[in-house]
View 1 (cartoon, rainbow, N blue to C red):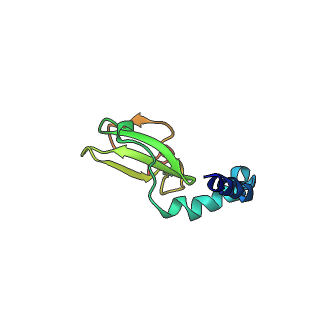
View 2 (tube, helix red, strand yellow):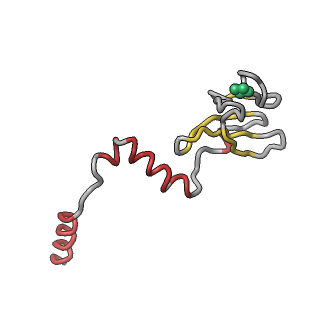
View 3 (cartoon, rainbow, N blue to C red):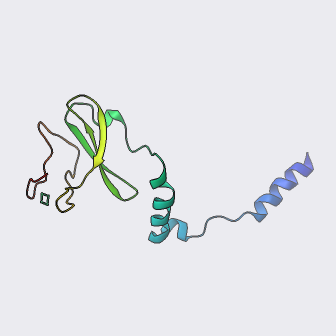
Length: 109
Ligand code: FES
């Protein structure tokens, strides 16, 4: 039993933690976004966040602005939260829409 504890202590003595850059460097953060988060599925919210048809909730994932929407059919879907014209953010805060979401600048999309 004592040798098992010694092995554990020895392993911790050899272990190295992540460097400070992994916590504060924006380049490391971007690399993690692209290499880990963008390549797999991720939970970005809950269906309860958009309880009623027409409810929308903006969020971000790996720097990408997204919009969680409960559509008129009751299904929850996620879209990019940007205008196709000039990339403006479509919805800034959670809210309810009674009709289609339109960009507030030119209402082209
Ligand atoms: S910027 Fe959105 S429609 Fe023109």
